[in-house]
Image 1 (spheres, one colour):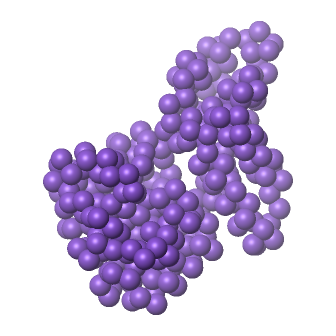
Image 2: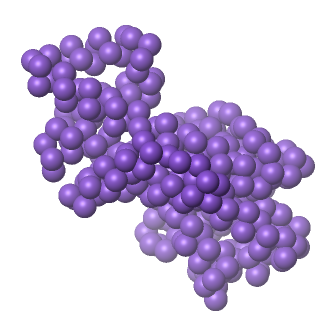
Image 3: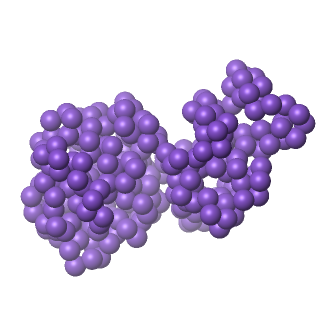
Length: 289
């Protein structure tokens, strides 16, 4: 199957590679052309613009940083791909955006006779590379079933949450838990160290208890070594919390802890930690910088 893939960052490049490994033919686009090179070397075709990509395929997957990047690539820029897709083509947006934005993109796609699925993922660089992502999917059942083999090439589970915007709704819920769990654990580690407990003792004991989220075991090497190479950049966690706050405002739901967590990540970004892994929130809490 020929697939267009737009957005080849930490996650997108690995997702596209897994599609390629499963035998799919790729047409790729990324603003930074050098990020397309590994896929080109394995047989992918580089499109000059999103519109150029759309003229070559009937399925487009986007994996972009934030809503305005998605909108520009799809619609607002003169070379946006939506206007160049053939009728009944399928657009799968794997970007983490807010639900109201996904619903807006679904409407824009429908006006152009293009089918739309919102399908953000749970997982970071490692799971993306290993094809172990979880997909939270919103859209028509028939469209989701058509796309399922693609999701299964990139991930280990597909959760169809309902109609348009329900995939991104679930991603909002997921990332609130993820962000707050990282902060709570980091605070506990900082307190424990101040009381004279070693990092090794803290990790070994806490990770054996039922109170710690399993994903934190994968953050142990980063925190112990003080090296926070990005698997999921801290600045994007801050962005996701902002989207959750906007979504909560739209629905009239108070998020007192999530908003306090968001501001903590904002302070970490301001102090230069934005491009580090989001577990660098430990570094910020322990050193203030």
